[in-house]
Image 1: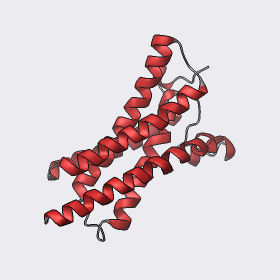
Image 2: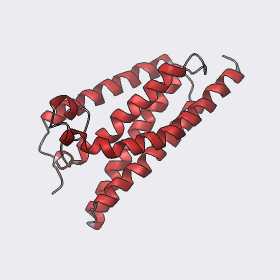
Image 3: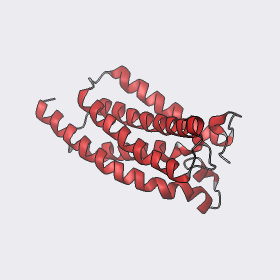
Length: 181
């Protein structure tokens, strides 16, 4: 692939990721309430938080980022000469960094400073998503496509997605899964 095609893919990835920051962050607010609004439909609970645990709140970034990046690739990979493996790795990094930031933010503020408010919890998403997306942009630009990366990323996404669904209905008795009071 020529450097022109790689640059075109990188520039599109950067633009798509910045738009994704706005869309995913904005959608996280109604997604937080959609389970309740749906009358607690099981299918909705598989993809949206069903309680106030930090684990369930990871649904606010995992599924929206997965869908955002997936739709971006499916709609534009040919037109914008996007490379699948770097796209998948960048997507996974964006998701993982966003999730880890939210968990870390919560436990540092709550555990170290005994500070837990709706405002600080909401702020974590509005910091985590841009941070994850910026790291995703960088990774897409620098990563060398290797077949093993594609396999590992697909396994990661399947396992994490399955764990979200499983733990929604079979949450272990651990602090990460216990709803805040």
